[in-house]
Image (cartoon, rainbow, N blue to C red; front, side, top):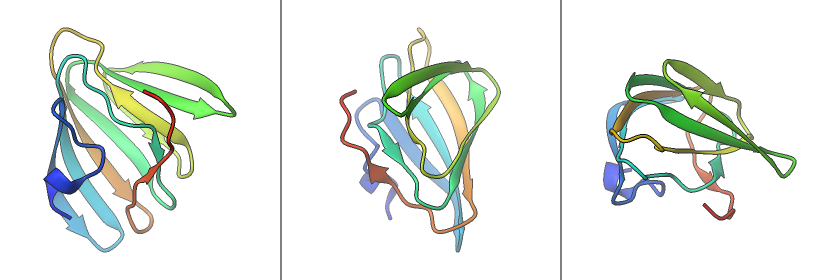
Length: 113
């Protein structure tokens, strides 16, 4: 999959694949101020976020309730957890995502941003 074909990419969210092997993907993501991904989940892999620059907002949708966390360092999202990320700060956010434990996938949840 080409980086521009990642369904979560948009004008304010850019992905760069650093490594993709069987059962593992490592991505660098840049989120501009006001940028956010669609709500989604992963079937078999967890998302492990390592924030390199800025503050990333990670939101989880658990049983219809949204839990929001400001991340400055490390955060992990379990497989099957509906989530999205956004940048509410005045500077861009850069983070590394490691997905491991199965075939990386993106299942859009169809929730409004």
